[in-house]
Length: 224
Length: 32
Image (cartoon, rainbow over all chains, first blue to last red; front, side, top):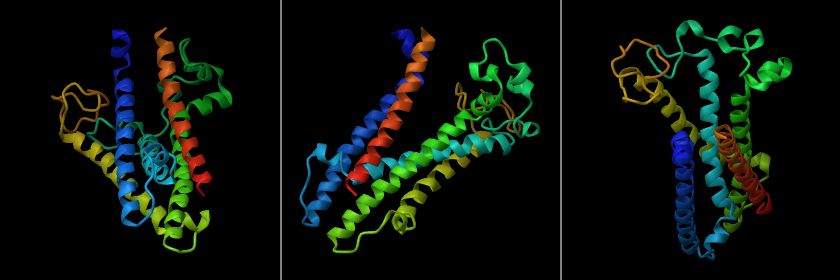
C-alpha cells in the first residue's frame, strides 16, 4: 500500500483534491442556488435535487472544458512554439514532430515500445497523436455538455422572467454562452503564459516543472 | 502488477470524466 501511494502520489492526491473540491462546490452551489431562489420567490430544493439541476451541470462543465482546452492547446502548441529559457519548452532547433529516431517510431521502435508503435501504419499515426486527440475530444465533449446544460439553465431563467426560451443554436451564439466560455479561457491562457515565462527566471528546487536551481536563465532545459 | 495499478488509475480518471460529461449532457437534455 505504501509503495502504491509513493508510486502514484500525484494521481491519487489530485484525484482526491478534485473530489473534495467538487463536493465543496456542490455544497456552496446548493446554498447559493437556494439563496437566489428565495430572493426571487422561487422554491428551494434539496441538496440531491440540486445535483440534478442544469445550474450545477453547467458550472462544472464550463470549468472542465477550459482545462481540457488548456492542455490540448499547450501540448499541441509546444510542438511548434518554443520559449527560450523555459523548462516547459524544447530546444529551438527541435521545432516540429522531430525525427523517427528521437521519437523511437518506425524502425527505431524498441521491443518495449507500446504495441501500436510496433504495429506501424494508421495505429502508429493515431497513437503518435493520442494525447492531443483525447484532450481535444474531452474539450469538445465538455464544451458540448456546457452548451446543453447552459441552454437548459438559461431557459429556466428566461421562463421565470416570462421571457421567450431560446434554441440550442441561438444559445451557442448568446452572450451568456460566450461569457461563460471566455471568462474561463482567459485565465487558462494567462496561466500557461505565466508558467512558460516565469519559469525562465524563477525556480522551484526539486520540481520537474522547474529548471535545476543553478541553471542559467538562458538555458532551455526540459527537467530539473 | 504495478503496471496494472497504473492502468487502473488511468481508466478511473478517464471513466470519471466521461461519466461526468455523460451525466451533465443527460441532465441538460432532461431539463431542456
